[in-house]
Image 1 (cartoon, helix red, strand yellow):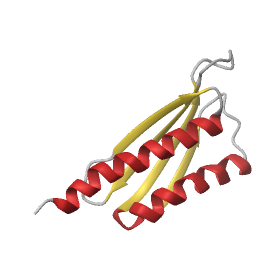
Image 2: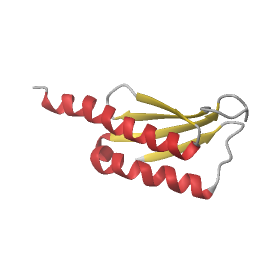
Image 3: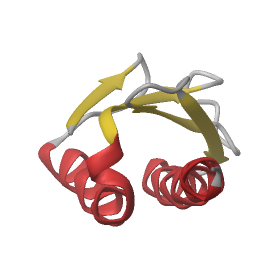
Image 4: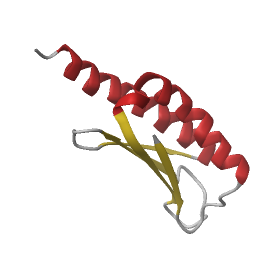
Length: 104
């Protein structure tokens, strides 16, 4: 499974942030990695450093043979937005892929 990380203006990308994203996606990979081809992470500061709840993390998982699944999380801190988005992605994949496996 390939992980692609993209940061828009206003988000300071660093080795520590990339490591945090990869750590948070380890759970998703353990649960669903065999069914996924790629996860794309987009980070954005939605109001150009004016503060507040403005750090957006979007994650798109691409399961083999199915439509992509996208989740979003917004927080005051990029690391917290990544945490929330990774948890949402894990739940969304469990819902979609678990249902696929149960279908006859």
